[in-house]
Image (tube, rainbow, N blue to C red; front, side, top):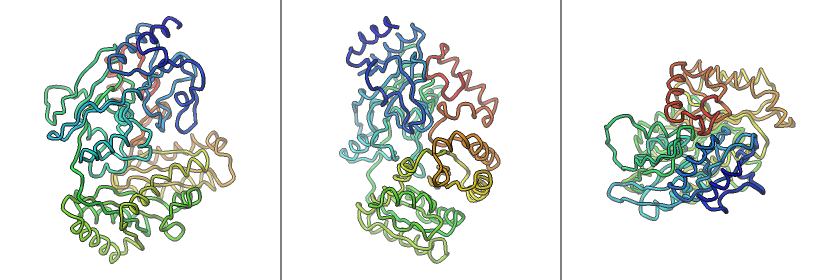
Length: 470
């Protein structure tokens, strides 16, 4: 392997091939569930260097783990324990190549941090709408590799819908430049969509052309207490009818998730914690005016109060207040991490089935593992819940995971199949769910996926053991 290491050093420079010292930032997953061992961490600075690195690894028969900000939730971007895999970190590739104002697009490299892109777009007078809790660390390449969702999917769609073109280094080290920026290109198979959401198993995304949008004239945010999940779904329908495409986000949080956040982040000033079983956070964006947006938003909240869908509510009166309300929602995963290891489920269900799913599954889990605490929150507007299970108070989180994770996962996954859902909504499959996928995915779909993997990565060197079993 020393020959390969020397070759890699000649490609990217010796300082950018890391083999010694503390490499935990690259070898440990964000949730601290697993810790692998890399042969080397290679940090290329250009697409051409990525291509040469891939060619060198392919020639040596060494597998590659592409990595962005390493904020993934499904153990998909860190090496295994063999010490024989190369981590390909793209964080040095962080250039904004072009902003095309007339075409409403921006072309960026894979290592650009999401929050940086949001700021760059805003400074140019535009909006890049993808937003999620890890936006200060996650990168565009990772967003694309997992088809990240976030809080604005209801209006703008997943990352897939925000991407017009890709630049990709194939598993053979060839460069495909598909950075066209075209909204219509009906010339064969959509290769872009093959690579988006493939979690680095088919090739390495090195750059992307993404959609930009005009900045809205106004944004209004409300934090409302609702009596039940059924009421939350009815409120969503009311908001969709009255606000139409202006409804940008619609989040739901159960009482315990807010109590946990209040416990660990008391400075956030949560409006409601103990008095109501559920709260929702909804946002309306308007391209006309602040007055127009306020009138429509107030009308929705008045109707909701009249119909008993909302018990109490606060509407942000400033940008700072709006950011604080969103910060409450985005702090739930951090509060849960501080509480201890937990069993996470990133699931999607038809919105109409969510109340029944939650009621039934809560009861089944409570009967199977008395004392567990449900941390249930997420993007109700697009049917994506983070349906998490915290250990009973006083129980050791690690021991709880080892003892109960398989049993609880089975309950949740079987319920998802019953209610027409999916075991992964926006986090991906990684290695965490790779062994469950065959049980809950169509055999025909799996066979087609294996054929695609074989065709594009016949050596099996691209992130093996992720999405599909090695």
